[in-house]
Amino acid sequence: MRRFNTIGSVSYDHPDPSIFLVLQSPSDMPGGDTIDFVIFPPRWLAAEDTFHSPWFHRNVASEFMGLVLGGASLHNCMSGHGPDADTFDKASNSDTSKPAKVGDTMAFMFETRTLLKPTSSRSKPNSCRRTTTRAGRASPNTSIRSNHERDALDATLAPSLKSWIESANDPANDFPIQNLPFGIFSDEIDAQPRAGVASATGSSTCPCSSAPA
Image: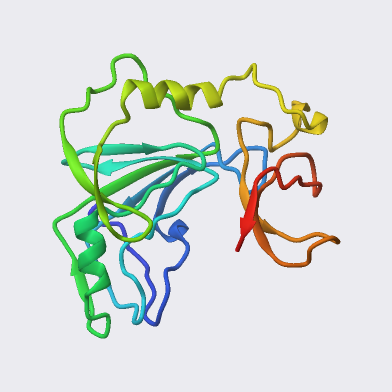
């Protein structure tokens, strides 16, 4: 993996993470691989006017990411995740007009279109770290969810859950009640773009929850 040839931006912004793709297992659905293996080896960062660290975000795909000589974290479909507070503060105040070397690291990631659920032999929480809130303030958080939080998350993924929108209960639907994507929408009544949660088939969507953008 040390010999993997990395590619990156020499102007601004982050290229698609697929530039770090090492191995790929395609599926029968375009754009939805069965599983991808990605690495983030030592490399130079030269993008100017760009926040160099991964920003707080959500993905449709599920990710299991970690360090070859370190810990790992699981970010299932639409689970929010991002940098810890120290990394956020350092990246926010760095001079991006000068190239920076990311060294002495080897991060990896498995990305899949399926949901990943830890087994009963998973590690127990044994450490805390400072994470970053939406406003950039630090807050304590364990690296693994508590049993109460984990049970609450599992309940939202139960196959027995049904939606009040009939089309969302179709087994062929990409957006059942267990997989509700966030998006920006507008309609004939209100042309103002706003955030919402989509649920239904094809191009038909339902703003089950929305807020002004």
